[in-house]
Amino acid sequence: VVIGQEIEAVNLFGTPTSTLLGSKVSKIDFRVLHPIIITRLGVLHDPRGNGFHQNLTVRLYQTTLEEVIVSARFSPLSSGVQVNQLWYKPVERFLLPKGFEGTISWESQDPEYLITMNLTDVLLDSGGGVLRFSAAQLQTEKQMIQDGFGQNVAAVAGGFTYTIHDGPALLESLTTRTKRFESHKNKLREEDAALQKESQTYQDIVFVDVVDTYRNVPHKLLHFYQWSVESASFKLLLKTDDDCYVDVEAVLERAGDRLGAPKVWWGNFRQNWAVDSSGKWMELEYPSLVYPDFACGSGYVVSRSLIQWLAENAKTLKVYQGEDVSMGIWMAAVGPQRHQDPRWLCEKKCLPGALSSPQYSPGELLELWKNKEQCGNPCNCQK
Image (cartoon, rainbow, N blue to C red; front, side):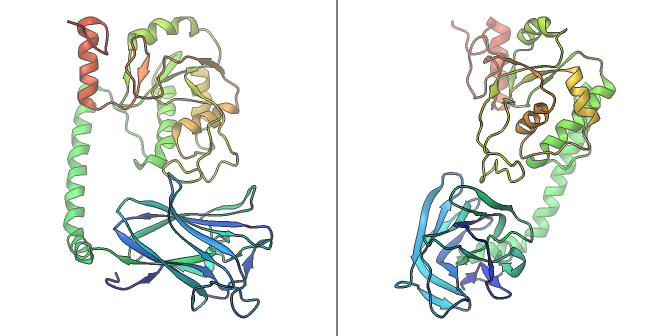
């Protein structure tokens, strides 16, 4: 960890010679794990001649909002200062807090291609772990050329420098890391014991062999479908989340006319949903601008025949960034009979007659069920 000095985020191994004809924009995403201050933005030197001959704009923006924070424009008349094989310009010093998700983009105003380098030819300096680089892209004005973080992605067109903010706090964090790690492991063991006890008492939890992260939720879903087919007899299966209110009686009442129908998928479907190229729901694997129709995750009902197909093909189905969009992509292959029903709410909202509603805390769920039992209306009981 380097405290009190500028850190170059991108260091080159060789000469910037990797170029793709037609490429106009290069981007690299990162997440801040400890506060930093951006000090300079830079572009690669063009090895084809002396001096600086490009016209580029470099921007740092918040990934999810695409809000520009600082930028620098480079031209033959205003090229900045050359340091090794990069040209840098200072920018207004801006503190990026822990958890900040940012994107550095390089955009060429020249008719020729952008000067870039493969990720294998650079060293990305995370400052000892204060940054995590997550994705890289190279695109033309109209389409993506390369997308991902593989070794052959030629998506680095420059660099930036930064300093670590509040060095003493970082050093203290590093010093106490072992103790905090042990404390975290103890809490996980306690939580696991509590879950095992609940499972033995109420038989309401299925344990699957998956590391529990957001990106692994589609794997968890497929494991659950496999368990369902092997362990339960059913005609329809309801999928929901543990932060959702579900009016089970209303679902059972309205499910009757769907029991005998083939390949039923009953839910509230999002249509023409754009594929995110950045942020929490960033999708780097699905090669389309929009997803196939998929049901909101607060609740949907699926026929056994569809669950059977998913369970049988679980080992070969490709998973994507979220379980809901993954389900939509998988179902597009088999052509289910979609039953659109807006009573499966996609957003947190209490409406009488709703079948489900998401994003409630445990306390809020208890209040909804208390109202439901007292007066039949989960939203409120008028006195």
